[in-house]
Length: 198
Ligand code: FES
Image 1 (cartoon, rainbow, N blue to C red):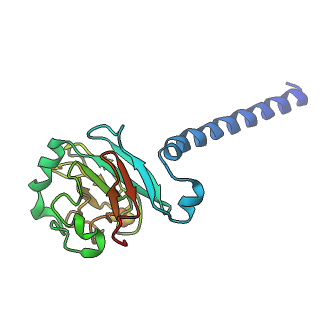
Image 2 (tube, rainbow, N blue to C red; image 1 turned 90 degrees about the horizontal axis):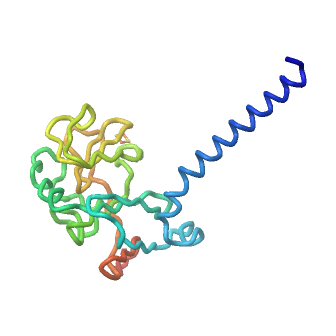
Image 3 (cartoon, protein in one colour; image 1 turned 180 degrees about the horizontal axis):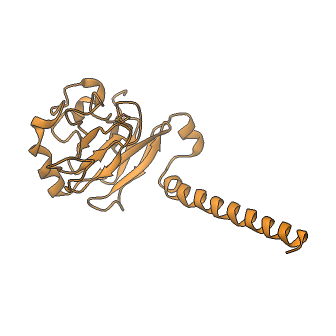
């Protein structure tokens, strides 16, 4: 192969690599950006956001951004709700008594305004990683036995249930944070403003 041919082959390889990398970034970014309702400016200012959950399927989870943090909206099925009261004795704060972790109106067994929707900041209360979904009641090496569905933090192994309550023995000291929020309609939620000054 001549020097010219070698150089041409190298150039093509570089272009091909850059294209694949670029496509990956776009593909990863689109679902996240598409799920955000407010303008970038409002988001940057920490303004409340409004989220339409009309298309959120039962049993699914939606992630939106508020104040630069991921906020989860989990549509809990009846089965998911029934599993919530099966493991109180294994939780650090089953009754949500640490008041900093949720508004008063979510200090209840489901940590929510409407039991079928769980809303929480998806950041581990240990050192700030984002826990992974383990929504199904399927035990594995990460969840440990008798798993009723929830979340697992891959950084140091904290585990949370479907009300984002932390399991005993986790490095995370508290349940995840429930942000102030309210329902504007049956399917429209405002996050970051509950009309109570929060
Ligand atoms: S950051 Fe989640 S367990 Fe450490």
